[in-house]
Amino acid sequence: KAGVTQTPRYLIKTRGQQVTLSCSPISGHRSVSWYQQTPGQGLQFLFEYFSETQRNKGNFPGRFSGRQFSNSRSEMNVSTLELGDSALYLCASSLAVGVSNEKLFFGSGTQLSVL
Amino acid sequence: GESVGLHLPTLSVQEGDNSIINCAYSNSASDYFIWYKQESGKGPQFIIDIRSNMDKRQGQRVTVLLNKTVKHLSLQIAATQPGDSAVYFCAETLNQAGTALIFGKGTTLSVSS
Image (cartoon, rainbow over all chains, first blue to last red):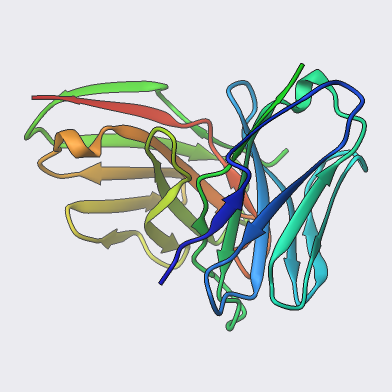
């Protein structure tokens, strides 16, 4: 079974641009979560989608948004990029068949560099 | 505020030694904790988890201990191998489903042979 796939693997953008990152979850997984990883702040939760609806949201500005499609694939968008948005963006999927303690499976991430 | 932190940023051990990685959490209401391993160029990989109604849980070569009194977690790796070299994170859940996590800063484990 294929793992979580994130595209692209690397991305270089300039300040003020916007970017869209893509995540394909493991087949059959219905929940997709996004995390930002930086050397200074570590791993931080962005948001989670389940059945095309945002179920949880972290403490990030509105420039960060996401969506989930009917096939569970997800995209996240960052508008008006800032230098501080340079980070590894990780996507994780889970089955979401139960009500608690789902195991997350992470992709390898998209490394975004903002110049 | 809520946070999960690790006591040491780095840990260096010899192959065959037992490793202990520690983590302190601040939210006494947290009821589910997970340890992840992240190798260079990869995303975090699930190692082991524990619920708050347990004190100890064992996996293959790994054991997680939970001390709710002092809000402390530890990950013990037996007979550490070079392949165990990675960054280790503890995490606690923000939601009941366990899909929104607070991660600690991480401990880099280096195993020399």
